Amino acid sequence: MAEATEFTLRIRRYDPESGEAPYWDEHTIELEPHRSVLEGILQAKARFDGSIGIRCSCKAAICGSCGVRINGQPGLACHTHLDHAQRSSRDGVIEVEPMGNMPVIKDLIVDMDAVHWKKIHRVTPWLIADEENMPEREHIVPRESMVDITQSMACIQCGACVSDCLAMEADPLFVGPAASAKAYRFVGDPRDTQQYQRLKDLAEDPHGIYTCTHCFKCIDACPKGVAPMNQIMRLRRRATGDHHIVDRNNGERHEVSFVTLIKNYGLLHEAELLPRSFGGNSWFGKFHPAAGQVLLQSLPVITKAVLRGKVSPKLALLGHKLPSQDLKAVKRIYEKVENRPERLELNLYITGYDEDDEGAATPAVAAAGNGQHGAEPGQPGQSPEGSPTR
Image (cartoon, rainbow, N blue to C red; front, side, top):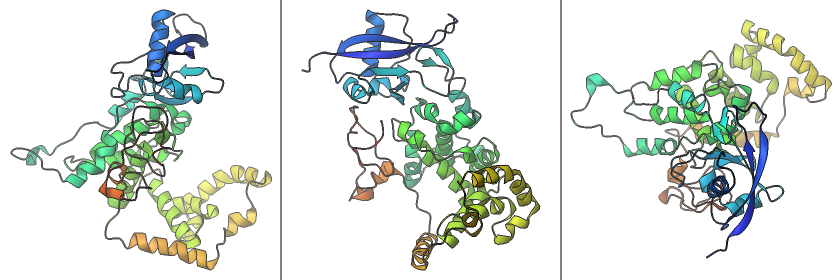
């Protein structure tokens, strides 16, 4: 058996009733290195200060209650080993603080009702059945349909993705990664009869699926491999590719223009993207009144970028030029994708890690190289050893 080792915990404390500002509180605990950060916090609470606030329940990475930030990174306190947390710290002291983007109730306890659960309720998190055509016994759902939503169903509602969402920092009204992943769980379920209405609602919402900035923070934060950003991209593909929902946020037009410009130029033509998104997906889009208005509003930002040398007027107006052979290679990629009989959805709960030789034949289940107890199937572009916190 491993011998008990001393670890120092630096816990972010805050008691709103005291009227004092948040402060750091340090405690030295003794536990085996493989024990969890949660066990360390509970020991500090039992031995030194019973007023330390921490929410926990199962202690087995199932309930999601003990979500915190450890050394600045969101994760489950019960699912992070002390020795790993110490190695990832800056000075050998394990820093534990409450999750972000949610009000702090006390110490490490945040108000998930005010943000997380409020947004989950926003997406109508239950099946809406066709009551007039209910089967006599049960719905028989195709296996591939359930496979498609397996990744979303793995969410344990810990709020780690919400904690680190940069889009929510800029726009607190953004529906958020957790709620979006929950939305896809029902959009992808063939038993639900409101797929179009759900997608249109999220596409038309100014704080809906097009607010995501593709920062990948929610993918890194998720301890269960749900990859919320991937689910947001699926919602967009369903809304645009399947239902052709043209939304008031110009999300659909923006994506179509982006794809067309890459196909035609091989690289993004920034000066064309904005007018095409608002005025139409062609060179003449810039002459549309809506595009002209947006371009006029953007002039101060564009001028500042040019003066600071961040934008070259020549490149901005004429676009980047690729060698002809490279442009032909880009077009071949488009031809291959567009000629497929059906769109391929990458669900890593079935296909495993991208690097797996066996691909979809054997789901990849491997221990994450971060000192935690196990791992869910992989995430895009990650090896089992390098996969984010589980």
